[in-house]
Length: 274
Image 1 (tube, rainbow, N blue to C red):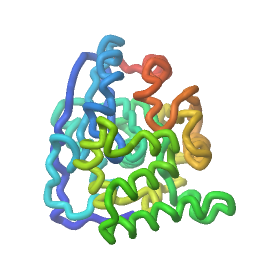
Image 2 (cartoon, helix red, strand yellow):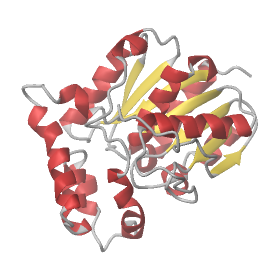
Image 3 (cartoon, rainbow, N blue to C red):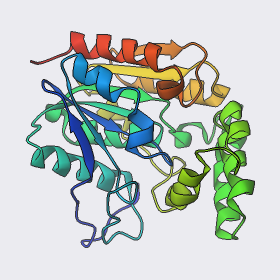
């Protein structure tokens, strides 16, 4: 894992906060910040009796960048911990999609006593496949695209290539003509300021000892390696539940929100504290 300097102090994150009951921290992925990411889940969670807290990760949405030049996953987790503490959420259910799943996992490994449950949606644990005979080349392609980014390749060239490795449907839809392209232009650079999925290595022994209810989700239309990583994450977490969202890809939590919300709320309700 990357290490942070003494200057990289945690910051309070901007967050939408609605409802009452068990806190549910919602952590978005690499490009789309909390508002668009969780727009279809925020109200259903509040109506189901939960307190939904959707954060903008450092450098995304309305949250500041802080003093960090590079952001390790554990600094994102520190930010989330501080934000929940300041909002008097002593314990929370953690829900993370894509890169946000790495942040939630790191939080759970660091402060398991503060986690009521852990939901991971397609965690990009690319390091787990780097030596895989079938998917090793796939995992290394993300590093190749990073080098292209550093050589100033235009967004419209590298973003579809990046997404095509994860969800080909999303890649075809994410073009300058799409309404979400302005979000891509605003946030895509953050992908390479953060500790990447090809760098982050969670401690497998700590995962195996994590005594936290866990749910791992993926859309059945995501690329096969993403399905494999979700399977591996579920196997690494003791007693984790594994579910697929039919007709959904990497954005299944938004595109198939009714199914996602039903799975999530049912799971959270079984592990509710209040």
